[in-house]
Length: 346
Image (tube, rainbow, N blue to C red):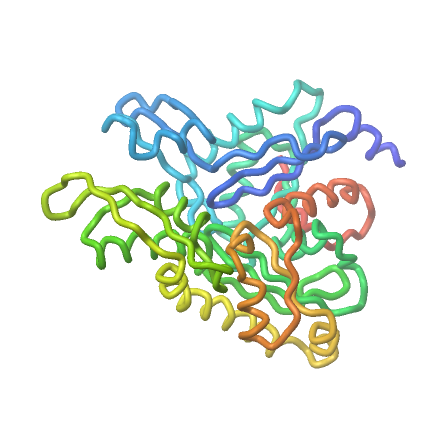
């Protein structure tokens, strides 16, 4: 261990961060995963006082008075409300970080589709939240590493990381993404489609949390062994009176199909644009699915049928990216490490 590495390990709390549309996860060197909270913040619209962050803020959705606004400062995987993102991250980091001589170095994951302006906005947020240096790593690279793959090998692999705001697909070799593509068709798209479907077909309005619950309980890409059903409460659009309906897993599967086809198309396009030498490796090894969207029932079986390839899902799919980001912390002081890109310094 060189002197710089020794000083950094002793005098600062270096951390890895995965700031997602739905959840924020923080990994601290020497401690592992120390925070997993919804990416929500609630504030008073008049005084701008922060009322709650994380789980407490999310639980206020649809229940808070009109003077309290609940927002997700991350949209489609990138910063959409810089001020609220800064305050949210400051609260998260302050809750788990101890006082040290040096401010922490931070590695953050970024979507394949993010622009340099969006990446700079993320770095600014982390700097204002307390970072000394900021490094970035593409989400598919982090996801593959966090899933236990050796991304340094001269062998092609295809990763599809399906988050709430974006789906990032990349072919990887020698520790870098060879071809990478991103789409905003992801977990939130499925949730929003349920809301629109119920509104159009049942003339009833339901909240985001209700749609999210439907997706998790009876949403599927491939049929369940038996048809599942769920009673849903909402308000009638005609008279505003509360009522309930019963939804089946089969009708939810039907409305999910067009979105699933979009995800399959970006996977196929990424594979088509990948060099032939790497295509053969991928065809042999298959596709790895990570991210919270990979929890959708039967999505691996559906993609297997749609692409004709082997498809694998990891057990800790929601934590693959943050585990990969955490693994990169140990490599910060290794010369010529090309997986993480140094982006910002005070």
